[in-house]
Length: 155
Image (tube, rainbow, N blue to C red; front, side):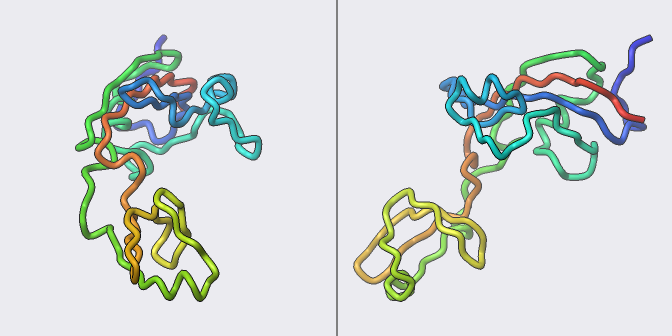
């Protein structure tokens, strides 16, 4: 008897690998793939991700791809930005006075990640008296490709 995912299933475990259209792997729950891609993190547990459908834990396209999959089933899905992390919004760009960086003894560089009260931002632009940070998700505006395997369906 095959177990299918439906609206009555709350939790399941999945293995996944996320790639960009150019083939670059940006995340994986599988240790060997993370090592091959050069994204291995020794402090991370490489095991199936436990997800609750409908909880808002997943991007919409990933959750949609899980619907009607069976335990043991594996598939590749392409997720456009609209069903992923959306498109870049100007509201998530924030300008900070250069003196704030000088007071903190930080020399900003384009692409630098900075943790602030507003979250983690990427230095987008540097001017003489101000620095613009981008707080959009790093995968915003990108088409994502996921290889998903449903490992287990939990009741």
